[in-house]
Length: 440
Image (cartoon, rainbow, N blue to C red; front, side, top):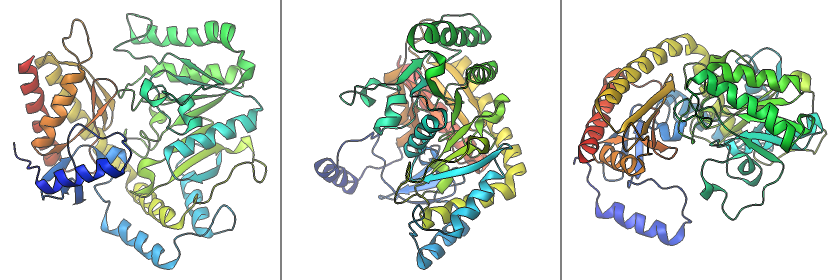
């Protein structure tokens, strides 16, 4: 084992447990201190390759570039908070105009907030205001946040919702997981059709009339649910169903957006557009920001119907503007690079799937890739213990990588990662898989 857990790290963790509420700590004691690009160092000086992008926040390298950091510093020295939702400021307007140029045609209004869950809270309220309907639809396994409105949409794990209900006004439906189709179909297409049929001919008949549903919240790739990629035809069928009944289609791009899949918006891969998009995570380059973008034809909302204090915070907007400027200037190069790197990762992982019994499924788009672990391929019993063991093996050999779902591991390195470091990280990952597989 290369990584050394020092008494300093152990002491800080001990202090942490005394004064902070428990959140979602990983199974390994990672305590980052500084980093740049593909690497991060902990407080003991241990060096790690980053395959987490710090939960898909640092899409363009750990701590972003010096140029992005400089823009943030400059704004802080000028004015960091302008109370933008009560007063006016040009910088959020400039950013919004720039963002609209990246969106599908017909998009024109943006609401600023501070996180993905807030972006989805805004989408909930906008959907109800625009349609004058009170019910929402979301998918089992979906994750849209932990505040009470977005939590009503979230069904990743029961612990997320335990003791926080009751939740009303949200109908949950099966997500078409080709590896574990809830309807036990033979093909991805059949799974897609079965899920769509269930919505229209069961939910809309027995649970709630479609004329009462304001919006369907959809992740083009389920993130926390296990990095599940639905059949391409499902998104098209879902959009068609939404249009048929006047239901708004809300695309949650909080984790999948900002080039993570090789497109600015992951939904672009599926050939459809949404009515409302939500984004966060990598949009702020490490600073908190949430973005809710609505189709222009939906109109505006009454003054005071929705607002906040820190939305459009100038330091966060400066970071977001610098990140978006980088994306716009390098979009074609990023698309080609992400496609090439993603293909290389998938090739390596598919080889692992053939080689190791505990690798049940490999799926993803671009550099948003999931590896589902099982006890054995025949039973497909989730390999939750194997997941923990591999995460720890990777960590103690210098690779930061994160879980997803019940027994999956997400591979989300910085999109700008050097291919030599990508290969080195995959070597560490495969060594961990090989060791854990041999223990079974």
